[in-house]
Length: 241
Image (tube, rainbow, N blue to C red; front, side, top):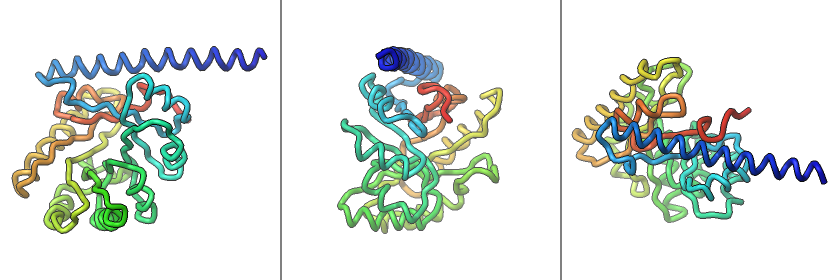
């Protein structure tokens, strides 16, 4: 009986902590938006649930989070297929082409498109399932060898033929900045992604609007530079294994 009571108390404590964390993150989003002269409603908070227990994701949903990001298909399938609510799921991890059949069925957004073969496969399964996929092109602005992502020239080559893929909706760009002690050190990365979006829209006559950039350590700087989606894990759910 005591172990069940302790588990109940621990669960209540987590919910209270999660509620506080969500309120703090939303306040920081609001303050960063004000500094940038933007509306906080223009910034979508995506809860990154890699390594987070399904029960905790449901609690986050009950506390107002409606968008969730997952990195790995095997983990995401179990969560999404059993999730009792109507949420929006974002694939934010590296896309393996042999897993795209699951991505097309489970997710509404793919943030991490970095090569043409991914687009072709997403389009093929979109045709099969009769549903469009909103995609973001992941760019490796910092040019770190350890990070995935295309170059701006790669993105241009993909966009040259994007209108041949009827089930693909090109919606914007995504990037990951390197972690550092001072978030100001990565401001240039977010600024460059925003400029690249403007350049691509102009060159290809598009109206892509989304900039998925900024994580727990740097999302305020990203918002100041134009982020429309921030991917927050640790600041909401704490450190995960």
